[in-house]
Image (cartoon, rainbow, N blue to C red; front, side):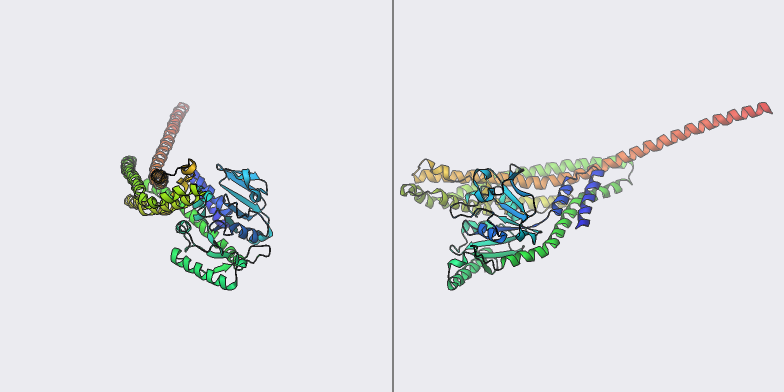
Length: 503
């Protein structure tokens, strides 16, 4: 691993030597040194994720309550740096009890990290445990960074409570965006002490069947109990096996970063070597051709971006119109709930999120995927390369969804007006989310194309400058030689005259 880190640092130095960007390689070198296999604990509200984490750590680190839901992701790993809370892109130190007490200290935070010297973590230095808000809850839906944080995890533990052994539609939709079958996975059934062995057998069988049917996951559930006398059958063994593989996964990540980082440098140096054999007129012609190529590429990409933006906007509008048929039967019951003393917002939130995700998958994601395929074809035509992305898996409706609470704040009981308001909210969410998703995808695909051609253009200019400097140096040497030769001729002439006078 030290050799891989050294090579990353060396590659960054070479990039700086030739005037290329080295920040990403520097960043990768630091990340690889601190690499840990992130194990994300996922599940619905009140399934026992936080209780499981506390039981694994042997200490009540995070809050556990049937009333208070986990408000933000908490990553725990071995070390001595303590608790840090990330807010607005900045990490600030926090009191060790903040994760257990919660409250205003965590308001506005995106996530927290706990780097602690706990005995349970000492044997897992290559592992980090990520406790997450319940899938489908308000904190999960409004944490914009959570989907990417979870997708980037190296392994998953799915947590189900034996008292509610179901995979909800919102949970299935979220889990379907994750590569569950591609990474190490453990499924856990908590609260096993609350049911008889026969009941647990039936619950386990039902859940295992649901996992296979709804998610395509073939897994056996581990039954655990997270009370004072905790029983964590299978979970420590799963983490221990990951720890054994952590070094291999770290090395694989380092090699991936190194390959991605040095590819532009290799192309730059190859171009320099090719250009060094060309004369100035040939270099000038090549520069003109490359400038024309870059201009044509920008024109084609701009046209593709404009067309894809229009199609994305239209897909969002079509999805909003289509969802009215789905929402129409719900407007009446939702309008009646306040009169019955019930809060309709939680039910409406879950329903609208499901609708948003379904419409995004069926109408908006195909547009984004088609755009990405077209960009890859264009890159291939120009002899360039693009990074692979899971653009169709970005759960952008979650981050764009603001919640239905304001719709019911005025006590609106007119089903027609409520239906219009619900559809308007869906339209706004889909429009905002699709714009954000397309902007992110456009940046991820357009910039590498421009950067690669710009790198080739830079190689060409550097070659021309080098040849010009060499020509100047050569000219200077000849002029100096000529001056010295003239001086010698003068000296020789002077010597001849003096010699003749003596004879």
